[in-house]
Length: 73
Length: 221
Length: 248
Image (spheres, rainbow over the protein chains, first blue to last red):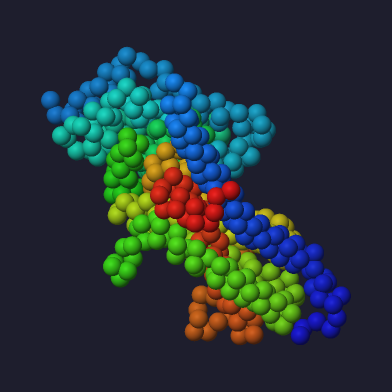
């Protein structure tokens, strides 16, 4: 361990501002990219599910219409 | 008539008809260069210092402006499709087209460069370096630029995209060209930088024709 | 090897492979990056000239190396895609580009925050910094080109050509240090035989390079999956997969 105390660790020998800014923004970016990927895949999946559900609803509605038509005429 | 000759003849007759579009890049570069003394101040030493960079940046931008029209009209009226169908080599025809473009749009820019050099107070030694770098560098601009032009043909608003794609690729050329002129200003030899630009040109000459014709094919899809 | 690679020209196989690899890459990469960073920040000795500011190296060098590495990876994908007409490769290009741009930005950012205390300025127009900036522009160019096409297959081909054009820039980036020698210090780990760094400083750096590479590979896998899914959303295999997961 190079640092005697937590305070010294955060001070980074007087360069704390620069070191923590560099690490902070970089890790923030990486985390954003991580979550962006997950979030996008969830979004795409739910979009596909919705589309599929809509297609099925249309299909069942058509089938219902077809079966009910002969009775009307 | 050989197709290559036919393309030459067509381009020359278009030039003879006097297309104002071809003069636009030239006018543009002169205006851009004349803006700098107004913006930076008319001190001769300052102008000499920034001169090489300014002229080269103006050349880059005006070449970009000229490139936009390189294949666009031919693409829209179906000439390129005829090129694709023709039995002659597509690569050769496109290179002829490119050469004509360089001759009619870029060479006037090189011819007017003494005026630009006067505007920015360049010495004779610097002017020779400028002329040589322009002569070797502008064909490179046209060759590499034509790839991006061919790629963006099917997108309607390609102008800004073209700048975004091409300017970063041109930066090494800009660096070496201005380094050569700056060396000339200090009475040092500048053949090394010119040699590197020449090497890049030869390399581009070997590869770009194929990339351009492939890009044209992608655009026609 | 071709026999092994060939099935991955099919998007479905690539989707499954990326799905299997992504969680492992992400977890292992993140864990290793955490260890490497803590090691570098806590246990590596301070530089005798630069003090603790040198610890930025543990992100700066990995991201700088990988920003170029990912660009060459993108160019390899572009080459394979163009020569063998593989659609999956175009999708790989567009999934690598944003991650690569992100890495390039990190390299520039950490460089700036390192430069301020050391050189007294956030930015100098030094060769390597400038070429890293050009690299960022090149990444943006590829992304912008792909985004502006309606027909994404055509866009993928265009992006591939542009990536190959840009890769000519990579050697210029790499050798620019020798071409224009300026403020920037020489490459830190070029000679592995006799490293100019002390080994206790070097090990966390090497660990971080590998860790960041694995983490970013995981991110690319995730994006590749999304890209394939988006492009093939009407294909039977995607519909089957969605059905299996249950329809809302």
